[in-house]
Amino acid sequence: MTEQRSPAVAGSVEERHDLAHVPLRDPADTSGLLEVFRRRYLLRLMVRREIRARYIGSKFGLAWSYINPTVRFFPFYFVFGIILNRGAIPHFAIHLFAGMVLVHYFTETFNSGTRSIMSNKAVVQKMALPREMFPVASMLVSLYHTGPQLVVLVIACLATGTFAPDAVGMAAALLGFAIVLVLGTAMGVMFSAINVLFRDFTRIVQTLTNMVPFSVPMMYPYTMVSERFGTGIWHDLYLMNPVSIAVMLMQRGFWITTVSEQDVVETQAAGSTFEGGVSANFPPHLYELGFAMLAFSVVFLVFAQWVFARLDDRVPERL
Image (cartoon, rainbow, N blue to C red; front, top):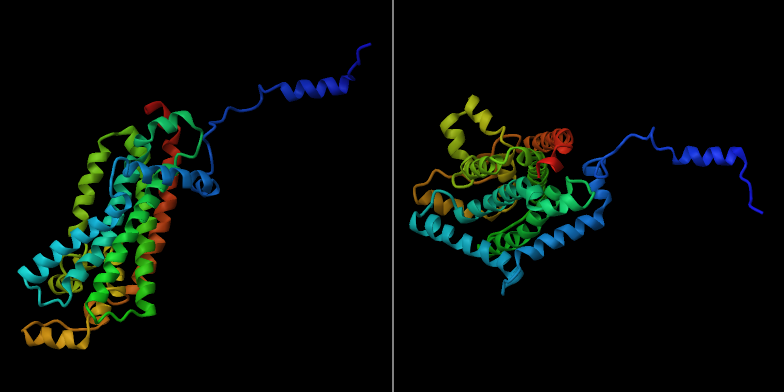
């Protein structure tokens, strides 16, 4: 004898199986960057996958992350410190390399983030996951490869014999890193979606990042900018570049702390007008500018997430 279901139970079953009123939803539709960090395990897998992919077939593997910045440092030291004899700026090679660390991190994050969705096209088409994960993973991979550059920078600072780091300087360097991390992530997130719709943006971003080293006080000191433009509008526009402020914060933590009083005396004896100290080599209110640029970068990250969300629905059909 079969068991008869009550009308109430049968009705509830029918209601549960009636999906006509349920709106269709993209399985990859998420809460954006917040969802990326909720899926930290998947993010770690993607970072490991990208790191391993860079060293496939390589005999030296991770050692290249130490070899490349070391090789990059010595030519600059030879050209600028010995051949051109930049005696006007003590330890100019460290001044230069401190900026190179952040500039390389920013440009690598921006470039790889822009290409990230296109580079992972097969994964995007097969898996339902927040697509913001790809530029974020690219940022973390770039951060991973920035570590060896920091090691080389610290070794170079110690080799001067006058390196005297202080808590304020290290905090300034961390603030500079935070600015570049947030801003680079924001640029990568926004342009990764735009690049899917308009493929020319890969070339456009490469052109923009080629201009970055010349737009920051890396190959030249900030004092040249202040002497050339004074306190006019061009000076103010120069300081509105977040990467410039980040580079100077990095130099505050590493370069200026290697310049001793003896270095200043010897430089001035050679006919230079160089003056030691933070106030003479950096803009006023450097730390306030740093926090302002960090706040701007956070706001820009929110804007980048908004742009990504507006374009995200068009990404699968354009891949």
